[in-house]
Image 1 (cartoon, rainbow, N blue to C red):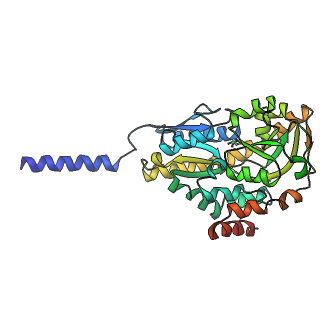
Image 2 (image 1 turned 135 degrees about the vertical axis):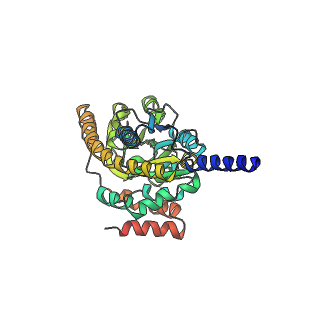
Image 3 (image 1 turned 60 degrees about the vertical axis):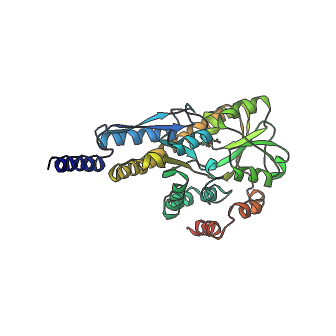
Length: 327
Ligand code: GTR
């Protein structure tokens, strides 16, 4: 009789523990970002944290480590997969090598416009790409803006691929970006973001490529004064959660996190648009040469081999076609 009662109490306690796995304790998610605190991506995740705090009476919040405090992007991605970092805001490019679906939106000239990109990444195709991260240990929560990436360098104005011949151009850790530079006749140098300023300054590289806010926030514009708006990639930013962290959460908490991430997207977009304008002003005031009438056609024409190499399965080819078909 006594034994039976103890047994029932034990079972009861176990059920209670299983029913309320995460609800009871406070959760502070560690979140990484390569950018400084005032950058739109960091601000958007801060907004997400305030939403979570409000909705859960402080039970869930995010502690953000901006400015590479937790390491360069590649290392933080590894730590996120391992569960040591809970949340991470990165670009799609460093995911390209191990999640093939992420290479498709990063392909050169994949999108016709911002509107095209918003529609694709905010819709069913975007959802599929976020879900494709799950088997690799990451839960994709939302895409953030990253505008268009363009070339800048310390040597000369780039107006056509011929001007890039032999130039040493820094790229992210992505085979896709290496292949893109090679297709344009440049020498690709993969390098972490935090090393680019010094490398430009000392002439280890001739140039790099990025959007307006990154060109400005990193002060690369001070050491690479020719900025050619060829807009070769619109590879978006993505906010991911470690699958290890995700699996420990209740369904209700997972839903709140998804909801907060989605709500942070519009905040990010407004901050992004403001930052683009601010960055343009700062760069122009510095007297940089901005080439905004680049004829994109020769750049587009050179991309055939890149598409062939990275859209290399029937599914990925189909993904390219479906993106192109979005009106
Ligand atoms: C920025 C992006 C960063 C990082 C960086 C880079 O535009 O926001 O996440 O990918 O580019 O070039 O390394």
